[in-house]
Amino acid sequence: MSTRDKLLRATQEALVEDGIAHLSARTVAARAGVNQALVFYHFGTVSELVGAAARSLSDQSVAHYRERFAAVQSLGGLLALGEEVHAHEQDTGNVAVMAQLMAGAQRDEVLAGAARHAMDVWRQEVETVVRRVLEPSPLGAVVDAAGLARAVSAAFIGLELYEGVDAPGAASALAALAQLGVLVEVLDDLGPVARRAVGARLRRTGKGRPEPR
Amino acid sequence: MSTRDKLLRATQEALVEDGIAHLSARTVAARAGVNQALVFYHFGTVSELVGAAARSLSDQSVAHYRERFAAVQSLGGLLALGEEVHAHEQDTGNVAVMAQLMAGAQRDEVLAGAARHAMDVWRQEVETVVRRVLEPSPLGAVVDAAGLARAVSAAFIGLELYEGVDAPGAASALAALAQLGVLVEVLDDLGPVARRAVGARLRRTGKGRPEPR
DNA sequence: GTCTATAAGATGATAGAC
DNA sequence: GTCTATCATCTTATAGAC
Image (tube, rainbow over all chains, first blue to last red; front, side, top):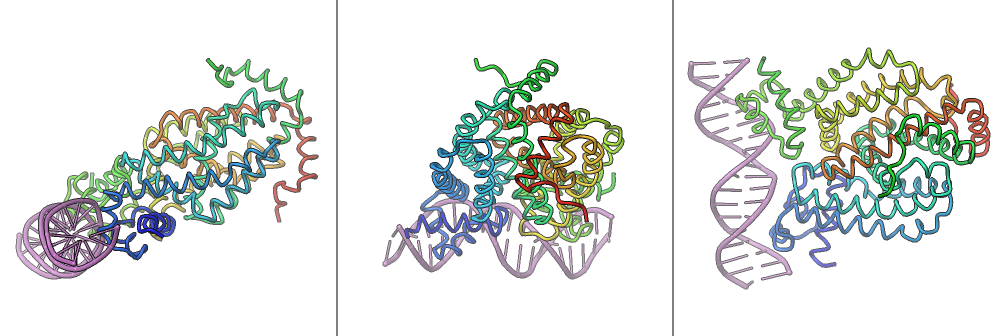
């Protein structure tokens, strides 16, 4: 493995295990087993290193699920795959990397760029499936696929941070969301009944999906 | 205002504006206009200072909404108040403080304790309302109030981090969640029809709310 | 309670030998 | 590409004067 790759890997590990607050050129280099000066030779700054590590990780993760997403045909199937993706990304630490990246990105334009990129590759992939699966459902009339894809991704990041602080609490939160998934399926099962009710509600509140221009 | 309070306030501001990565005894003291050594005199360590600032902020915020929560009588009212709380807490920067606290808490037991406390005071308050409002609804049969309260809090934290990185993206995510709120109301309106459908689904999937022991 | 001074260490980054 | 050596700066934390 090249020094560059060793540094990228070590950065991902450091974000998961120590968090971005304790990350430095020296701690990452030590973890990678290489000299500290090589961080600056290969990446220029520590922020660029972290950004590159996050980009490569998100690209890799999303590509890993591409065919799985493409194969989803039903809302139930999407919810099931969603739970699986979440469990796997949690295990590998990829969500933790995203969470630490975003926390550090609040005052660092380089990290912010990497965070936008990562959120966008996930959004792009999830949005396609959500749109396809929701189209024939009564839900399709109400929910904006792109917005929903972003909301789900952001929610998972919040849950990951919560997990690091109170694991049992986070588990019960996740279970509650799985229960909400059941509700969505119910609404879907009701079909035309739900569609009419949704239509009536929208006319009353005016809160529906914005018309495409 | 006492030096102690100046430091607490300055810490909250620093978390919102600079993030926990750039927070140090010196930066906070400068912001508070006091001597750096006073951080250690009053709080012992920087972590204790951050923890105390987060605790006081969360206690204060939750207390501010107590009567509002108590007055909520319907699911629609709860969703409306939820949107209002989120908008206000976003503006005041309280969610940003929570997000930075949790990011830093992943490897710091003192910060983790403060984060658990903050999540718990919110959970406690929200859980009561959710349980009361959901009881007569078909949703009451499916959703665990405590878990849902935690999930919503965690999701808001993820959205806050996303907001700092991609404001328009976060806005569209929030809009999508508001649309989901409409769905919940629809399900609630359907009453007995929905209740029967929920019952049927639960028997099929076995994913319902765990029975209280 | 507040200040100055200072210790003891970590950090980003660079120059220059190999 | 990789190493050593080094800077200037920042960090937590303490001792001791006031």
